[in-house]
Length: 227
Image (cartoon, rainbow, N blue to C red; front, top):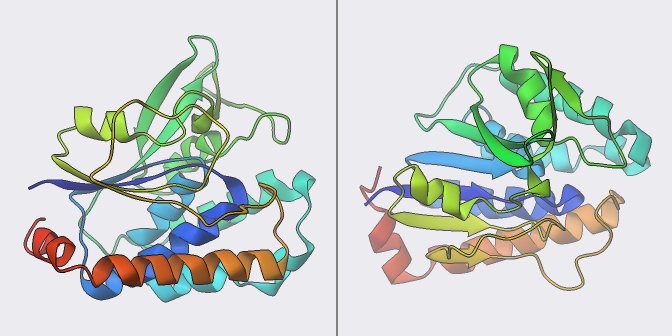
């Protein structure tokens, strides 16, 4: 089996994904590849380079307590740059979905090193909050504009099993279904509510959801030796 991990967009709700990932990594889950849109791309890049605890620690960083929407571009660029400057520690490729604004179609980019920072920022370029990113004359914006949870793209890339972790983003969802889908708890809250309490609630919910999944015997049997 070829497992892919798919991470959707949804701003602060990406904290839920970080909590789930901590549980998955502890259980030994190792995807063949990972693909994400928006905040899912940022979290995805971190899975291959940072310890799960380090990703959780970023989501708990007190500096985020004072986050404001106008800071989104700078925050993504600073943290994304730090992630991509860190050597890859895990074998799975990480891919980011951005939107080609002229053609209104998704574009998939591999996040290989710091030279791909612009492509990561493009995937996280939330309309109305940050400006589109221009790369080689083409304007790109948030991947969630055309594909908020790229399950269908993962299938096209050869995945036979898909674990998708939504961040309850506002963009269109594909018709393709994941073999396992985890979603943030209701109420999901505002997409840019980075208050400490909201982040902590989402992290804890993710950790609990991931632990429940990893306690399922059929899931554990399915991921062993799947890479």
